[in-house]
Image (spheres, rainbow over the protein chains, first blue to last red):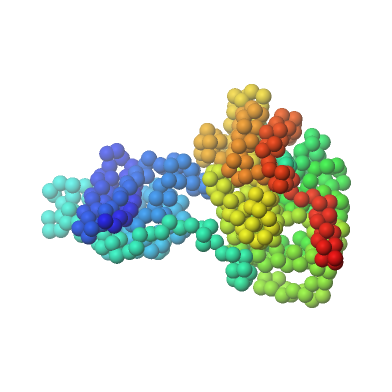
Length: 205
Length: 366
């Protein structure tokens, strides 16, 4: 049986958090679809709240601080990423952006990513498209077409009746799984194995 | 093994008094610190090079030239000399002059510099930092080793029939270190030339330092300079000591909390756990640094940062005394017996390099 690793990042600040709920459901949907394809998904879920101080310390000192190190390494070697943030004042939270900022510049290049967001009302849903997606496009991530926005009402029966949240989650998870399944498992980067010899350094001048 | 201090030359307000030295006072304090290190018996004083406030060390060879005349034994060095933005011709001239004036009691460490605007201020682009370091250093070597140089490269105006003066002392260029925190390319460069490699690990977890040094050692052997464990390695370090550990914590904490670079970030507890910063009694510093060899192998130079973050001069001089009287003798006693006989204790001195050159010349002539 093949195996892939997914990292699911939730930037929810509350506890319990509806952002975490959406994150878990997206991860389960991807896992189920990978399972259909004969692939075992190893899923690591990270609440940025738990490493918030370490993320800022990493930004302030320039080296991975505390538990941030382990999480950054997990993202940098994951076969796919699920990234979910609450929307504050039209966009992802500052903590979410701080985390993205301390990822290595190439950490998400070509990596399948599924985006999700939560907010009070569906009026904010396009923030996923005008704000979150361009961020990941800038990082050269391979963002799947469907992103999932969950408004407060979506967690009850009053949400979208035609295209309800569980359907959207299922579709998004399936899209992520399809891309992840189509790729070779990601190789752990080894900067020392890939470091150029002195002859190469000279000939690169 | 050599133990010394290195300064970044920051002008920082003392957070406990609110007092800020002016540039003149800071430069003179650096001279006093270096002279005190010499008198106390430390082996190395190294200065950084910066071209922006709050740093004052813009002109290292002026500073080190004065110190060459006012100190006796301490090796004068840099941490680092900017190989990217300085003209390699001027580095060749300035450091050959320092070598002659100090009678060979000097070496220098190449670094790229990570202050982005310094590059355009000197006419370069930080995105070309690596090729600049490679090309400039290749030219610098030729200027020291060859009497007459014809040269053409990508970054500097070509040279035809150029001779850098003064010629290196006894025909042997200064020993060079290359400092880099995270670029394997620089470890490779140091290994290629058989130069020293310095990892300034003061802001970095040890497992990273271990990988970089290991890579340098492998490449040193690959390039034919001898077994990996004979490569010349230096490490950064950082300590604050008082006889009583709790006194050291109480006294240093406001400096830590407000320090440039890491102030207002991680707690001192977290930072001392994650990096080589050691705050406590001399015995705690001894224990921490005696263990460094387990990560990087037996090495040749350990430099400590002790004069930053607005610490007053008197305190800095006391730290030098702690280092020289309590820490260094104990570290030597601890580390030297473990060093295999074929692994050098010190980086090569000028006299050793002269002897090596004449042996090589004799062998070539015979």
